[in-house]
Length: 407
Image 1 (cartoon, one colour):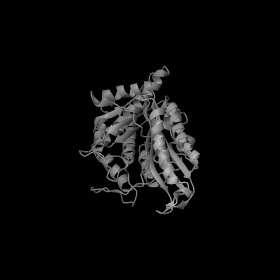
Image 2 (cartoon, rainbow, N blue to C red; image 1 turned 90 degrees about the horizontal axis):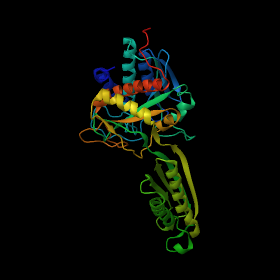
Image 3 (cartoon, rainbow, N blue to C red; image 1 turned 90 degrees about the vertical axis):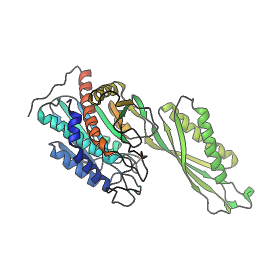
Image 4 (cartoon, rainbow, N blue to C red; image 1 turned 45 degrees about the vertical axis):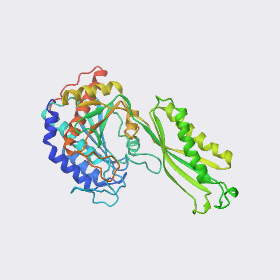
């Protein structure tokens, strides 16, 4: 498998064309019918066993090649409700929807990885075992029951019998052509915070006759930030950010109700509990001034935790494929990813592939784009990661994976 990256580079035109087609036709979470259909047809053409409609719009495809472990390779498919501001000719054709996070590149990378592993199968060089490819819906949002695409696919059996899993994320601001991989918690957990502060309405000229929900909500926001700074140790990363506040009826009326929405981010359950206590105590203290307060935390994503031994095995494999200095340590970031649910079920490795343009673009921005020259690297890195995990799992079980005989 030493020529994996070189073979991936030969797929570059095909991968770029696929990514651009998906970019032109983005679909929101649990609506990825076209994307899933394209992916399913590509995987079927490689001779894989394919199931569609898994976890609403997800696709599961298996490359079975003799007895051995089962390794999952995953890519997310959904786009974001953002109006693209593009200067290229593959801009979104769907008003108000765009691939602003790189999931189009993830799908192309997964199809590329499947192609590489299928070629190895046909050449008789693929180790014995099963590779399971997941095209996952709705990473960006949860449904009405608070479940994202990863959870829905797990509930539908996408991880049944799996021994390990891997996935990647392109990094718009990260150095192009570099892989970033860490051990332990590499991405944060995230939950939404919804706070409602209820007071009593009055004329703006007579504020003493009311209970000002705007003033009290502002106190709660400031008190929360102060509480976070005193409840968390300086070495324990965690943050609460309030990104939306709304309420009131008119400029000359004391507001009777204000709603504050935000998120909390963390790496450990201890920090998560401290953050929850901070927001509840800060806003709860407003009741002494006459307010009625409701604090609700919505279910979110847990931290993404890479299995230490599996991550080291993948790092060694990627080092061997890419050469010295191209696999960098990934510092933990408080961004959230629902790959975390897969990592809770089986030993997993999640890594980033740098894809910065000369003028780097930020994710979830109307001008987001990537350096498409990294698409072969995405394909090869996913395939090599899957092979490394297959060998790692087999080694722990006392097996020695060997090429299976040709069919």
